[in-house]
Length: 480
Image (cartoon, rainbow, N blue to C red):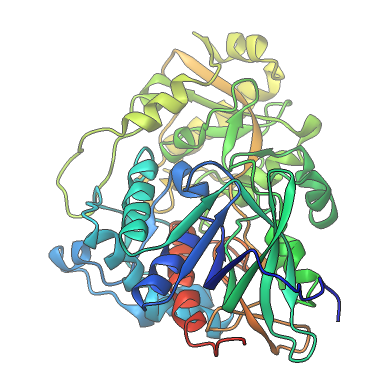
């Protein structure tokens, strides 16, 4: 069997070793420690958090207290149906998420986390997304890290896992080699190893292998997302699920400042290419914005422009909370992200096109057609856009100056495929057999987003599968 030979001497021992101290890794470690076993977290960076520190969206939970207060009936069966019917998720993986997602929610609530409220999202059969979370990431990380430390979790920073170690007799994963400064050390996992290393958004070679068109995409995740966990598992014969679509297009970013410009589209802006032509429905009707920004990457020169006016810009950050009358306070982080973009501004569409580098005739025709459709039909007839975001807020004209635009490229924020797992979060081989002692959770797994991604599920699924992995890892028989 491939891998590292069983060492004669171990430098460190734990019952369960968790690789990665982020959205999935911390809940996994907490679960192990609260079961009375020793959990050790190996974190490449000098701090916990991973992508959780950078979370900007929502937290999808079916059956939350916030829903109950509003009289919204929701639960595991409904979110399961959404994942299978809309996202094309593997039934076993979707069922595991659906039946355990409330435990992720409770873990945060028990730490005193208060969610802003419920915001509706496309393709969810019930309003269930708690958010927006932009700006709350560090607080969420602190809450989980505090709980982890209080339960006795050992967190080792600047420890980069390199290779898995397998018992040649049984095939069980029994530890890892770990790079610490200039040394390679052997870490023994008496029961299991949980891979929670995130994706591979900062590994250009892996992106080129699985999705060459996204090599030009800009990674908006920690630079530690190098695909380490994926490579370690593949070396053990692990199978993959949805790896061909793992590198999913995400937010539109200002090409110069790399600040997020997605919020303008959510309030009625349009997207055009260098010829001034629209190329997709901007309302994220498929469940998320990836189809739009993915096609944007295939436009001439791999760039596109978001076009809007002050009426649209002034709505950015306005939270439409379910069950609340009128508008609530604005999300300052969303407003800030737009202000950090380089914005071209003019009093006419022709002047805007000239200053931004868009074909003047094309943009004038596009905006004119868009506005006239709304006047005569009440919606856009070119791509059938009727709403600003999903089925929220009727589409609006872009007819009152001043007009603005932002030149954009597409970002990569999280992987939507990876290792194949079962409902116990065990990593499977090519024959759908569990690799003994090996679990995975978070962005490193596949199986939930085969057809599309339901906004808000990424963060809650990472936490949930971390908990699932921890619960099952402690049940593994101890090795030697």
